[in-house]
Length: 99
Image 1 (cartoon, rainbow, N blue to C red):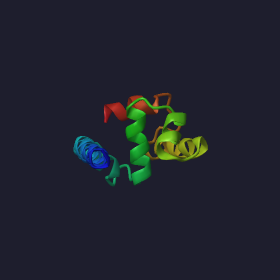
Image 2: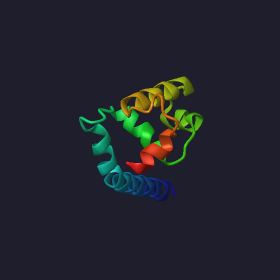
Image 3: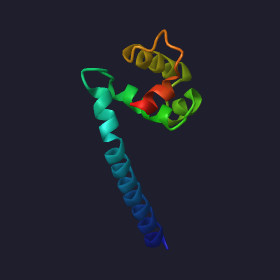
């Protein structure tokens, strides 16, 4: 019984690794574009941008990344600055979806 349970956990972890790898492959071009000299977003800003595109709220992002909602709002503000959206009416999600 214990071996069976351990095997199932290993299979689950293997599946999670495969899913994570596939997600990274899908999002890599988007992340590379945001990392470019044009935008200069750091890895946390890129991660938050990806979650914004998925439609996550600041609260949901804070839970996923284990950071405060204020920290998420700070990163969102930095992303808007780096994308020159500070004084624009366009939503961050809409802009990121267009990239």
